[in-house]
Image (cartoon, rainbow, N blue to C red; front, side, top):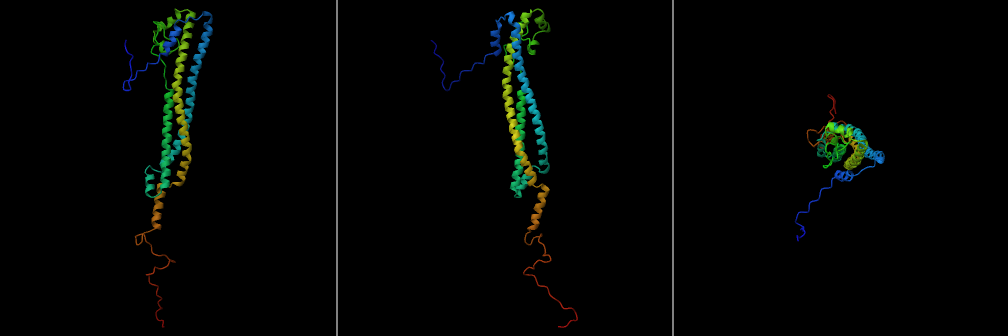
Length: 286
């Protein structure tokens, strides 16, 4: 007898089997299903309602994502207007200049403003990318879903309709009885309802991630607004900063330097200065 295969810690793990084809499973159960003629109309209405429900759900999620993108577009335009004021007043090299002059608080405040806008932009761009990835056109077409000879693989899905020739598509209705056509529609609706439902799962996953990033970017923008106001109110512009630096140098000159000034009227004389001499007018006697 053959011994069962043993797997050691260093051996390759057994390969996982591929998930079964959903279309193949459903088609296998529907292939030999004979629908009684008296129940065809009821089954047709019920299966059509299921297909319309899941189709409407994916359309609803797309519409909701479009509304969210529109709102984020207005917020991003508002943030862009605010951010345009900051670099127009403070160049990127200005925080380093503030640090060299000893104004670390103003430099850190300006650094925080730039960093906040970077975080806002990154989260917003990633959120848009995730939402667009969730909304992108995707079709759940199993590999085993093939046409049955000259008959189309589906009476509802465009990709399976165009797989057959125009004549075969027309013959699917002309040379087929009413009950057989309704039965095909019922079976197609059951299959495609499940396929559309499978497609909704990744859509919702990516939309949730994108909306979460939108929430983060909105919070960052709400925190950033007062920071921008504080920056504009407290951090001087480069021209004002240079004027303040020059004034400080004039107020505190070096001893004996070129900026030293002579005493003005009303100031006391230095100790080594000579007192004024009162001269008598000419011709006067003692």
